[in-house]
Image (cartoon, rainbow, N blue to C red; front, side, top):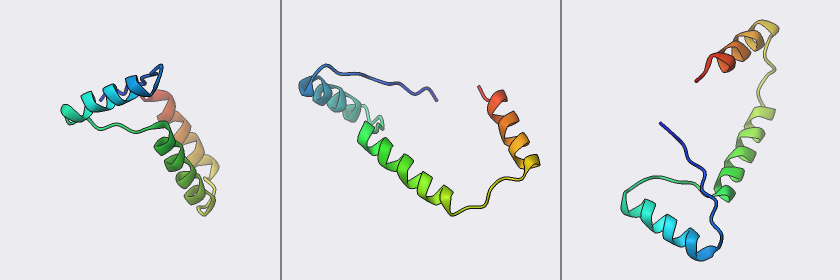
Length: 67
């Protein structure tokens, strides 16, 4: 699935884009919602253990191969 970033010039354009996406039943998140979700993920991440070197290597390899 492709994700798009839309920069609106003012509140009016923002409302028009949101109305358009709503009319087509396309989900979207505001920057504030995204920031809040990122913060929550960071808080959860603080409570989890660190990756072992082997797990870290596998994770980085997966990221590099992602398209």
